[in-house]
Amino acid sequence: MIYTVTFNPSLDYIINVDHFQAGEINRTTKELIYPGGKGINVSIVLNNLGCETTALGFLAGFTGDEVQRLLEEKGVRTDFIRAAEGTSRINVKMRSDQETEINGRGPVISDADMDRLYAQLDRLKEGDSLVLSGSIPSGMPETVYMDILKHLDGRGIAVTVDATKDLLVRVLPYHPFLIKPNNHELGEIFQKEITSKADVIVYAKKLQELGARNVLVSMAGDGAVLVTENGDAYCASAPKGTLANSVGAGDSMVAGFLAGYRRTGDYAAAFRWGVCTGSASAFSDALATREEVETLLAQSADCFE
Image: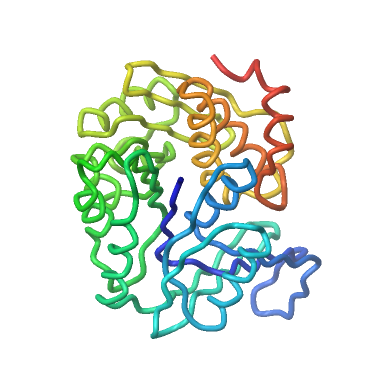
């Protein structure tokens, strides 16, 4: 089973506005509402790819009810904790001449809520996988990802972390199975501008020296790089297609990688699944389906070095 944790889920309200003008009345030309949050995206795509997954995290209020309903509609197994104070956030993503996002704050997560999460995590078994991804609500300790890896250390649970800066760096001594920064986030960690795949490999190996087992780095339209615990480095250019929606592409890459690795036990194959799944989501208004991923896998063999 692959479990995901989303500390701050959302309803993503995605709107298209022709030539948005600040200070004026603007009318939408298209509207979509999705359950949002990085871990939730991972669970949706894993479910689409036929992998067993359970989405964990915190929901609150009427927006939390709708997140739950939408996931049930998609057939995604969930076991959310209901927070008593506040409401799950609504994130507005506007597509116009420029893409703009306004993200809400989310509910208050109490110590009792966190105790309930740890009780859930204690039920994970050896061989299970856990994905920790995304931001954390204000008021939650910045060490929470590290605390979870420390709590689970030595239990044979493969943990994937997709987070930024200190949230990511702090977990490295606990040897996460996979981390997935993008090249800009990798550069922020080392205070370098990283634009080439050769530089990505250099700095991904530095993250391995700090404890990461496998490092998957997304580079948007420039492709991706995987540096494995076996010492191998794989590079890919981006599959060809028309960008429709960048939201969730990185989460889809994580889901595709994990699904591919579960299916094959091979890092090179998992990398191909990850890249094609991330691209399939980028080329669609919704998150990638298995059919879309398999089509890209068949078409994109020349993207992989």
